[in-house]
Length: 115
Image (cartoon, rainbow, N blue to C red; front, side, top):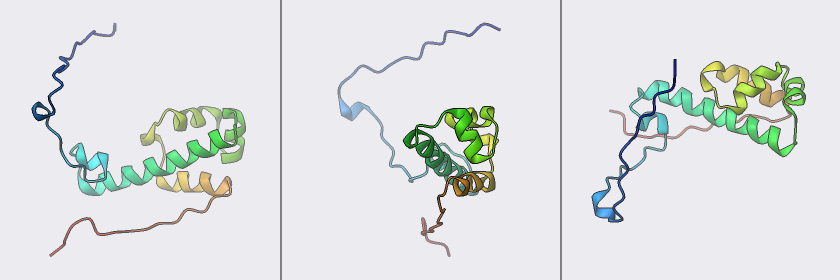
């Protein structure tokens, strides 16, 4: 199937008053309309994946070397680097960070008042 070339109109006006902005909740997944409980899991997984990517880049690891460090295959490392968040559980991401010598800490904060 050939890729369709869809053109999206681009607003070229420089007037800020014509542009709508919405205050972020701090969780892009919730801002996209994903249910709160699911958005929370996605945000945690995304943060853990970002840390794994930082480890790979800061240590200048090849995908093969990162796979050995994290005890996963090279294609799984590629999935991390491509941000394929749906392919990893929180447990798996925490395990990989631990294998890299990092300790994961969890903090919580209230994001809205609960009756």
